[in-house]
Image 1: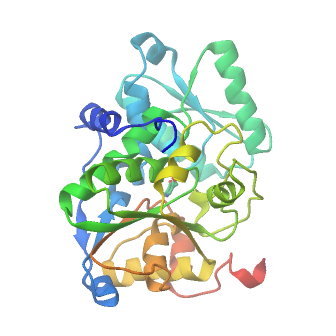
Image 2 (image 1 turned 90 degrees about the vertical axis):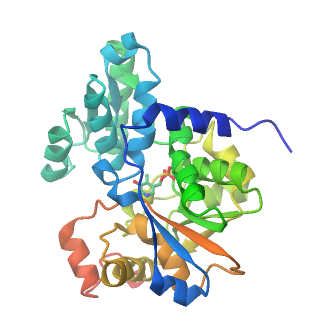
Length: 334
Ligand SMILES: *Cc1c(COP(=O)(O)O)cnc(C)c1O
């Protein structure tokens, strides 16, 4: 094999010790309906029950705890208005630091107040995510705030891997793990943990057809940009970073496959989660269920674990998906 990977099982075990007591260990719930469909036991990793509503709290907490006291006192900064922004706001406050979250003027007021409620300082600048990111870089250069990236950072990847340790502990005979992929921090960490414990297990990444940046990058052999498009799985949007240092190499080495889902399949996954499992999950969190329902996971033998990664979905959108009403992101509208 090639050069050693940037995050090892020892890093993941250290992250587990560091964040213990600060994030919730989440349950792995057996799903009778999916078990029947697949003919093998299926466990749902209920990570959408995590504090702040997604696994991003694991990475953000470990990143903040890995800083020196002096760095923590200066404060952390990021440009995410989604799950990473929520997680970093919460993690910084919990550790006596302050997060500054930069966002554009186009971000809806409810998202802004939610990030404020979690204890962050909010800076509203410009009219795009790029301008918000420029503000982050300015704050790093001028105020010496510490940037905490959402996925391409060893401390973040190591902590997302703790979820993989919990899966193997709850389901020691797991043979297939289904995990959502965007920037690849979650998939890289989970795959590193699962394969260290169960080398024969498969780890399969899942993402939406539209804008599948990691899959396009793996196919090209280097990080490539993708055009961002609206999707029910909005938390899976965005690229992997053209100067990617950590997650591209790890996903290339450790993922067995990346499977793509249509908007209709993702909607069906969300509906199954609600109707059969009584769980509210966002589109990104439903891609594993969606792939099983769509019959897109082949050669299943043995126990399957499915990561439900988040639950931060607009409730009006969730309701319309549950009612099977017009999906705003349906393929025909593209
Ligand atoms: C961020 C996120 C993902 C993707 O994680 P990456 O580490 O960027 O691949 C999946 N699901 C949810 C809910 C997320 O917030």
